[in-house]
Each structure stands twice: as C-alpha cells, then as structure tokens.
Length: 134
Image 1 (cartoon, rainbow, N blue to C red):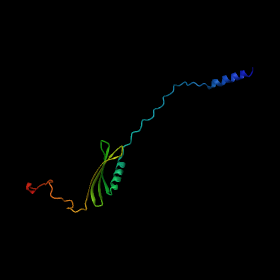
Image 2 (cartoon, rainbow, N blue to C red; image 1 turned 30 degrees about the horizontal axis):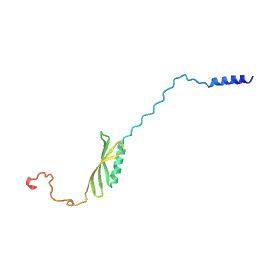
Image 3 (cartoon, helix red, strand yellow; image 1 turned 90 degrees about the horizontal axis):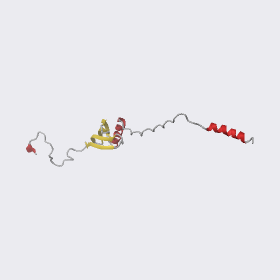
Image 4 (cartoon, rainbow, N blue to C red; image 1 turned 90 degrees about the vertical axis):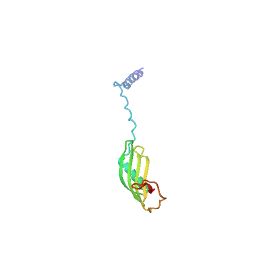
C-alpha cells in the first residue's frame, strides 16, 4: 500500500499548481478602427489627370486654373494649341471617385479659311447697324 500514498501526494501537489485564478478584471478588447474615408484627390493629382486627358487629345496644354469647388469637384482649365487648333479645354473631376464628370472642349481649327463654314446671312447681333440692314 505504499504505492498509492506517494501517488496520492504527488497528484495533490501537481493539481494545486495547475489552478490559476485571475485577480484583475479583464479589460474589454479595443474596438477596431472605423473604416477609413476615401481620400480626396489633391491639386497635383487633378492637374496630372488633366494634362493626361489634354495630351491624349493631341493638344499642347498650358494650365490656366485648377480649383476644388464646394461640391467636391475639381475644375481644371487649360489653354490648348495643336495640329492647327486653338482654344480652351475645361475638365471636371469628382474629387473622391476620380471620375471625369464633364468635358467642355472649346477648340477651333485656326487653319480654315474664313468662308469655309459660311452658309448665308444670319440673324446674329448687329451692334451699330441700322434696322434696315437686315
């Protein structure tokens, strides 16, 4: 009967060392950070995208203005010159999605003769002309 007594004492000693009790209350797990808001396009990116769009049309581009409006739209304006054309190119980009919203291409061919597109007398504004000049 000697065998069970040392076995009993050994198991009592080992089992008492295995019990762990936490005395501090556990802290709640930190919350994960909220999803990040998309970053708006900055001035340099808006100008770069504008130059890319202008050059893809075959124009030589001179930046006139780039500004962010209150409704998160970048308005980028260029003076353009190329292949006989001259004028302005206005581009609108959504600041967050970076999509091209609007293109206003005010470019005219400066190489045509003055009468190429003439299709007869018109009824435009006639400043300083008499009413019978119609």
